Length: 264
Image: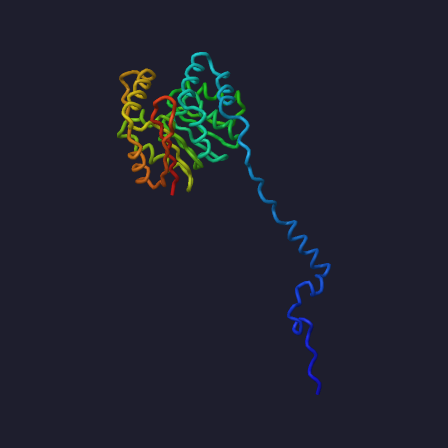
């Protein structure tokens, strides 16, 4: 009896998939439909925002009354574009962001220009400043919202993707600082980002320099409650944040520190 004839694939080890018959027309159509139904990959955003730095600051200043414009120029001279760029990179490029102690809405207007997908909610106890903030946001076409009052007592229906507190914490009484940070944690969504920009206590010359300028701005009666950046880190860690921080050098002797705390 003759042995069965071996198949080409079995008899020829050098055979490759190219030796197989081509897929049927129906199989090719199904594969094309499958590929076409896949969503396109997101387009990477490598270019920096179009409005930033001096241009963004100038847009804000032109919408302010003369006295507030002088104040804004002083604030932006202290919070230089380099320092703002560090915080801008840490904030999400879109979503709901809370600005604590927003004042005239200067930084809400700045970060809103760099990434228009941000919806920033500013809170400040000064009603006159809140009105100015609203006018600036309207003049820039930003969707920012502003509320007069204490952030700890305001009722926000939805959690925020991020929050920031810029040079405000040392104006909060020391006994109230932890409670404010805890409240901000509770208002953040999971993995939300809290950015604290403040003044650290070292070196001492830098602290004294900053304190003198603070006194010129707020007077001699208001208590100032500075902390070393390690203290801020310990407080935030105890509240359930993962903390990173960086010292940002300046031409002037401000002891800037930027703290990025992620809710975990």
